[in-house]
Structures are given as structure tokens and as C-alpha cells.
Length: 124
Image (cartoon, rainbow, N blue to C red; front, side, top):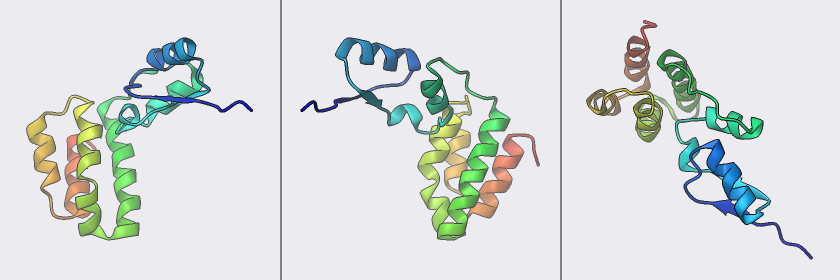
């Protein structure tokens, strides 16, 4: 009986995933860091081609949507604490300065965080 093997580890680009599959003969790849704050990476993997990261305003729209869903599930204070890692993953990859990201992670609730994100993207 054949056992499928899944390759994992530092899969950060579609080309890297393809190379690992070809080199190892694995049945699939598992991504973790490659997809953190970058859900568009999965679209590229499924298409088998690199896709450009969207502009900051689109990244912020996605992050605000995630934040809204977390707020419904956890409440505004707990969701703001939970979102701290995601904020960095989403925004640092989009070129937002670390000092700005650090300021956002200190906001006490999702209402103030959402307003700050909207202003960052020029949407509010």
C-alpha cells in the first residue's frame, strides 16, 4: 500500500513548491509561513503560477474583513489581542513600517483598530 508523502518547510513561493514536488515526488506540499498574512499565495499555488501581492488598500480590506469576523466570534477586546500577529503578517509584507505595525498592535479594541486600518489604506 502506497502512503502519500506531504512535503513541508519554507514553502514561500509557488516556484519553490513546484521544485519540492518535482525533486521529492511528494503528493502535496504544506504551507504555513508562506500563507501567513498572504492568503493570495494559496490562489497562486492552486493555479501553479506566481501571483502578485495585491496593493495595500486591498490587503487592508482583507485584514479588516478578518478582524470583523473575529470580533463577532470573540468580542472587540479579545479579537484585537488575537489579531496582533495577523496585523504584522499582513502589513509588513506590504511594506508598512514596523513602527506603524507596532502602534496598531497596541490598540485596545477592534473599533479603534478598524478605524486606523481604514486610515492607513486611505479609505477613511
